[in-house]
Amino acid sequence: MLEIEGLTAGYHHTPVLRDVSVTVERGEIVGVMGKNGVGKTTLVKTVMGLLDPTTGTITFDGDDVTHAPADVRARMGMGYIPQGRDVFPDLTVEQNLRMGGTVNTGTAGPIERVRGVLADPRSVLGDDDPPLDRIYEYFPILEERADQRAGSLSGGQQQMLAIGRALVGDPDLLVLDEPSEGIQPSIVEQIHQDMRAINADLDTTILFVEQNLEVIRAMADRCYAMERGVIGAELDGETLADAEATAEYLAI
Ligand SMILES: Nc1ncnc2c1ncn2[C@@H]1O[C@H](COP(=O)(O)OP(=O)(O)OP(=O)(O)O)[C@@H](O)[C@H]1O
Image (tube, rainbow, N blue to C red):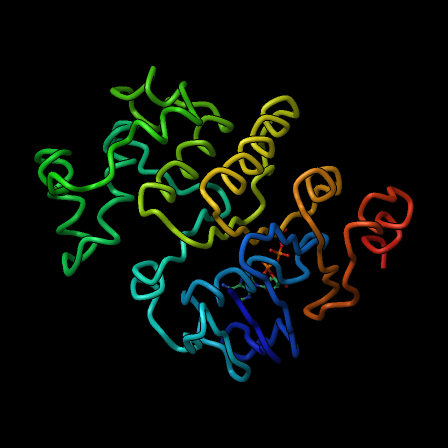
C-alpha cells in the first residue's frame, strides 16, 4: 500500500533522512522506532506531503505521490495524526471531529473549513457524510465530551480525538507520529488496543513512528529501527516478540 524508496529529505541546508526505504503492505501495522531526533517526524512529514523530499519516491496504492500536496494525499486516503495531536483547542470535540470529514469533501481551503465548522458544524458535511457513531463506538469519552472545548481534554483524550478526527475521513492508511508521547501509561495501553481494533475491524493499514519500545512491541506487526536518518535494521514479528533483541536494536 505504501512504498518509500531511497528517500532523502531535510530542512534547508540540513539533510536529515538519507536513503530511507520503508514498505507497508495493506492491512499491516508497521512501526518505525528510534530515539529522539533521529528523523522520525521528518519521515512522517515527508510521507504526508508536508516536506518535499530531495530524492526518492513515495508510492501510495500504486500512485506516485512523491510531490503531491498534503490535501491531495488526504483525499487519496492517507490519514495523519501529528505529533502533539494538533487539535483545535477552542473548538468543541464534535467540531474537531467534523473538521476531519472536510478533507474528503472537495475544494474548500482550511480557512473556509474552519469558518464553516464554526458557523454550523453540521453545515460543512452533507447528508451522506459519515456519521460520528462509529468514532464514538471506539472512543465513548468523545461522545460524553462532544460539546466541551478540545483544549479542556487530557492528553490521552486529545490523542483519541486526533485519531477520531483522522478516522472521519475514512482513510485506508493512518500515519501516527509518536502516539504515546505525553500520555499516561494506562491510556497508552488503551490507545494501542484501540489502534489494533481499528486495524482489524476497519481494515485500516497503519504506519507509526515511536520511541516507546513497549508501544512498538504491543502495536506493530513488524518494524524498522531508525538511527540518525537511516534505517539500520528491519525487525520481523518474531524478533519484536523478543524484548532483549528489540532493545538491542533501539540501542544501535
Ligand atoms: N524545522 C526544522 N528545521 C531544521 N531542522 C529541523 C527541523 N525540524 C527538525 N529538525 C532537525 O532534524 C532532526 C530530526 O528531527 P525529527 O523531529 O525528525 O526527529 P524525531 O526522531 O521525530 O525526534 P523527536 O522524537 O524528538 O520528535 C533533528 O536534528 C532536528 O533538530
